[in-house]
Image (cartoon, rainbow, N blue to C red; front, top):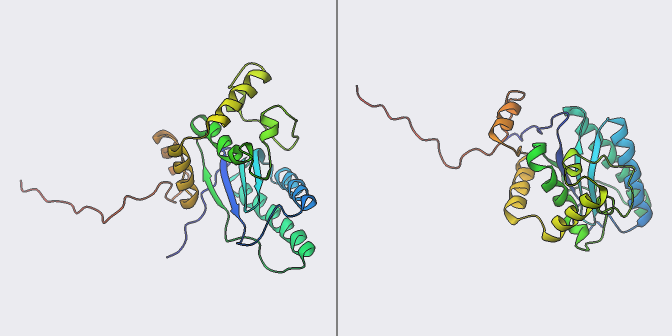
Length: 226
């Protein structure tokens, strides 16, 4: 069965995950991890994309990004992952790909999903998982020039202190298992997340399915006698 083309749209946020192969530690070398962030910034600038959050974990990279066009997301990820693969392989005297396969991505309705997407990206780093992440930026500990804060984050409060305090409380509470499950399902299938109106508007731009098909065989039509 042919795999579905990736659903990517300009000017809309996307959650993106790239998994490393088993046994590869992406955080084994601090200098390489920092190089990965430099490559990410350069790839975002070249593709005219905005990075809202990131977490470089030991076994995967997770991003929240708004590409300038449907093709810009692929350009960003291709440039970033390939450049990092070259320096990683050279440093560790190895060959071959670092990744388990294609990166996974899900497009999101901004008003409905942006804050949950920030939590999804940054939750593990906030809980102490080893990572290079954007969580310190959103908690006011440092300013990260790589990032563009989304409108949803600014709406958390009228002052930086209010925004940071409210977002910290959200991180402490954690993303609900139901919302996390929906996001992970969307990532696995490359689905879109949002209201019916949002999904309908996207469907007008592509022939690709944007939500999972109902399980089971289609119901047969029943002919009713006149």
